[in-house]
Length: 126
Image (cartoon, rainbow, N blue to C red; front, side, top):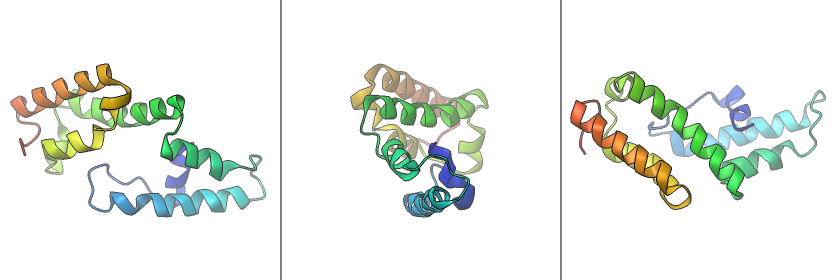
């Protein structure tokens, strides 16, 4: 559901400067899809909005999983995307900070992996 908006908007790199504006283009895409004659979900935009805002426990978990997938890819590739894009520790911490409150055990693991990545030279300690 979350990725539907990326059909038009494209997938914006999590740590990109233009990330803050990505939701506007994604929302416009989902609104367009909702009006498409082939759409069988009348309240598609509402479902998408719920996943984006993460109001329920389930959607919060979906958002965590959405963030974990690229994080795991970076950890397993020795920080390849982080290194290639000059991503800093502070950026990774900021992108995952929302996890600390709702899922503290997951956040503790993420934080330990971030520290490991810094120690390995995959992330700049800034």
